[in-house]
Length: 304
Image (cartoon, rainbow, N blue to C red; front, side, top):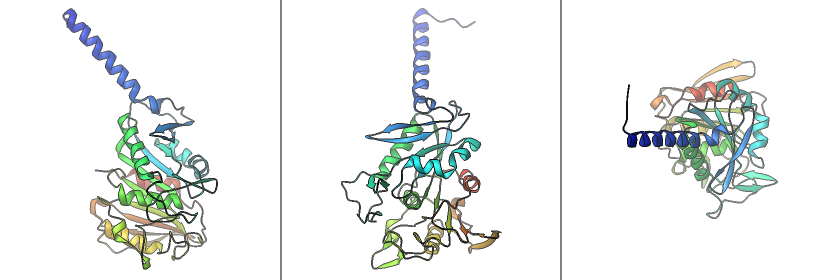
């Protein structure tokens, strides 16, 4: 039987109490949310909606998926419409559904430097930094032992798809993969030649796997390019650029998945950072993503 001197008992009890305190504190932000609910947590001077999956186990680290609303929207509103809560419950990932930094038409838009929002306003240095906000949320949830740092992902619709693309461009050190919906970009349109992405505006620090979903009848973010000044170049240009950024060696392969659905994929990429696009024929500017396919793709990629 182990015996300890009186002063060592004191130290042992203190150590146990400290461990219990820090364990409780670590899970406070995640453990306070009910399995079927969500709540806002403070991130600096802003808040962010966090939702835990059903059966959440506070003794384990979980994957984290950022779900980014479209322009003029909100995190809570988009989360309710996306169907991703049920996907989260089936697969056990945490959802973060933030609001963008810039008020826009009763909702919010994302701060992507150098690109105008739907209001026509180009963000300035005085606007809150959405990348820093999202990065701070990642760091906070990792520090509180809620999130596996190798399994952080981002998806979003329209403006949120553009924002998830931007995160891969400038914060690849935090994201394992992205899944933009009707919004894939690979940097800002090039000045003077807007039919091309500007390589200087998308320089990820590592290869980032990409799966994207779009509809060929989207008139807001047309897959053939044009549209608003924040859009311009085609989705094909965006795909090709990500294939270059990820060092994909094989030629793109196209296959038919269903009567109205095709898939184009780039393989032979560095760090297995594949690039995949699913196109819904007749699909418009809506959530055309298959959530199960999306999660299957995201979850097989871990950031190294």
